[in-house]
Image 1 (cartoon, rainbow, N blue to C red):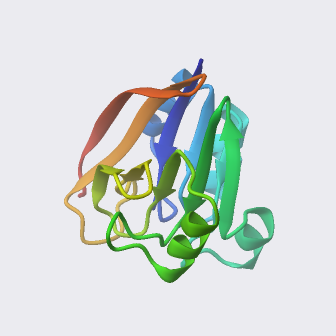
Image 2: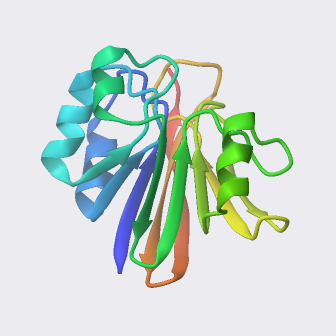
Image 3: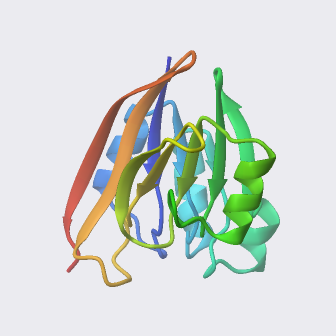
Length: 165
């Protein structure tokens, strides 16, 4: 059983609430737009970090993280892309990756819109944790946590971090 904290769009912002939730996880996954390398360093001090670079991330972050990250967590294949869209509205890159081999879990960020949707056509779960940072048009800062247990994805929680001030 692996407890995951799922973040996106921190845009160089992190606070003690995010770090407290990170300490409770086994792994931290970040869907891009870290904004600064300091965010990466803070998260990596707490737990193992997986992620992708986002459109605002510079050369240093892009050298550390891929644009497309495909990996297994226990028996669940995961595909992560910062700008990926969502079921019925995937970006060309996401559509290409999914059509080659659909994962069980597809994660994206970028939109700052929290979504959890099941894609019947591709038989996968799509998650977008929204934005945990303070930059952007979103009103509520959000992230998600869930458990991967063998082949199961379960105990999904939406975490509201408070209004973006």
